[in-house]
Length: 331
Image 1 (spheres, rainbow, N blue to C red):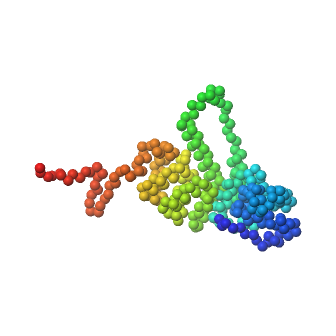
Image 2 (cartoon, rainbow, N blue to C red):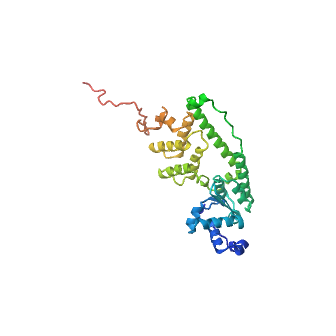
Image 3 (tube, rainbow, N blue to C red):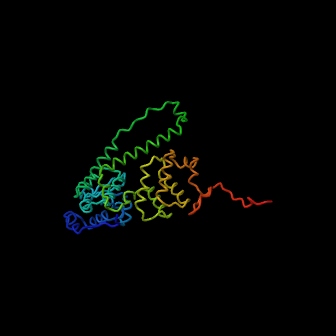
């Protein structure tokens, strides 16, 4: 989203700002609304030390101002453990319009919030019903997910604690696969919170949902730097879907591996990459190590092989054909 924040002229007409705030309070409030750590959802992570540095204040002054805005003005909430700050009236001033890009960005940023109570705190002041519903339903859904009882494993025997060799490669692989499935199930549940986010088919595809992920950033940077097509947003989205919709235990590494192979064979297109990934899935090659040790892997490396070329009006010359220039000559 845009790297700027709007402050409406009504800010100066607010009775709290007009009658209760000191000049220092107004300066601090404007900083909370416009600093570079703010987000589209009105909840962002910032430390008090960073505030003091940006404002040129001492830590004592920042602590006093935070206490004043939390308890006296009651305009913010701050979690000292997660370092997350929420602005009470953010939604009233900044979330008055919807649309797919806005909803995508909101959903992406809500997923990064650790203190879920802050989501409910900000949602109370959002005037647009569909956006407020997204906040509230996301909060309820996340609370349900985090409150699921965790299966407790029985205590291990003394023999098991001494000898850990019973943990085989297949057991570890099964655990990783289960973790992968649980992650995918949680993401599907989150998508069901607000299905209309994906229903704006008349708008240009957006990558805003993925912008917070480092693994996505790495894939996109490789794509853009190696000639796959910087402006091909749709192809990027299709490729990124393999991060969540595949059975790979190392999805990012597998995608990058396939892209390296595509570059080595000068096949810089989505279809070739997807073909490699599907082949690996069909053969249950779920990690880079398994691909490297598989006999199937060399089929993607054509450098050591001769290629059969066809010519118009002629026949294909087999790879094993050897031309003998002395054939037919009489000695």
